[in-house]
Image (cartoon, rainbow, N blue to C red; front, side, top):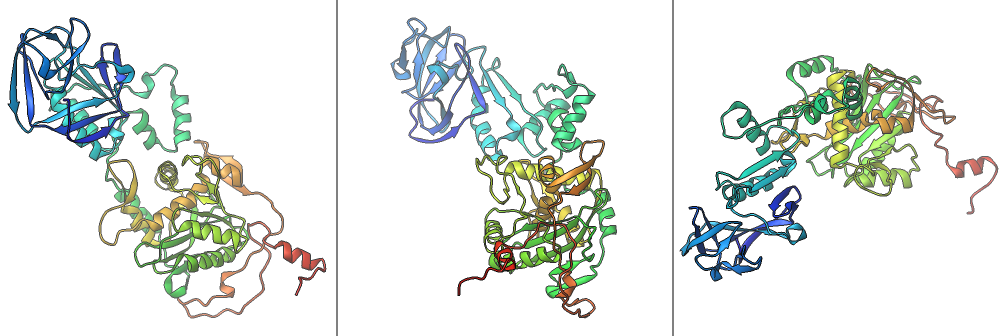
Length: 508
């Protein structure tokens, strides 16, 4: 503690320190290297080690002295009488708290019997920060037998310090004590509250972690082995294969379909994939994957043209396009150059952005909602029929990491691009999204959509994909045929087309 020349600073937003006026916030902790120290020994037998410039408050008049200025017989730290002051040298770290609120003195090094450290939401602090802080601070705080450490946190996976400390206390393997407060121990919370809360956060799994103190295994797959086997049994070979095997169709477009297209964009340099999924939502108890496009070498510019082509094939439906990074180029080009209007806008407010933007904003909050929503429809209801075996395999390797995020399992050849595109496709059924774009005809028992209906925006155009493609699987050829009126999109005719229909002609 005190003058720190070589030091590291750790910001603090989660901890409080005990002062002479209760617990107070502080801005951070400096951890430093200073071999020259003083050892202050007290009449009680306790001692403290600090640097010569460490400020220590005298009990006699409330002023402070540097440690090097203390005398034997001084009373400090409440009621501790200094009996010896010895110069020592060692490599132990020294510590100092930064900016304790209201300029309060704080209790240090376990000298006072009521010293206490409070750690709040420990499970949600980045693991590397927690580990460094814990190694630095715990030995000092725990040096007194009368000091106390209180940790309070919501469960957040199993790969963190909080889980280790709690389970050690619960099993009796450590000297820690533990307790938990469940959701039904809070006044006013009953089964109706539980049901409403589950509906709001999207899954019983999320509820059990947030309110029932259950640790969900970090590193777990998005699919257990039983569900993986069932999903694989439902996969099928595509009926149509286009674009050298990159564009696969399991169904032909139908006038009865309610199609949603989702897009995840990569750089096209042979690493991650650019993916388009088409799902049919006419029956929400059996949401079908009807088409997919996947390519890791196509540039974002050319991918925009491919996306627009696929959108036309499926009747210009709603498009859920992640706009982060290269995705913004696809979203903006579709809107500006092709005049595509049916682009879903969602996630700006959840990502802390004041203005709405075209496309899906991928952010910690929106991804969490997206994964929770996906797992409700796939894991709990099992109402999504995934035809692409590659997507199912990718979903099995889509795992939860210790910090609570979901991503592909680390390793060569593992990707999550197909999964992320499906997450953004299913986001159309998330509460605030579905109300914006569909009429909800019926809700299920969890107040999720059971039947949806498209808003009627008038005449809509649809082009059959087989009218311009040759099926590479059977080498069948199809004659070009004019578009036919069916489908589920807004009128895509431009203002120029309407003016020319009225007899106007553009200037030459």
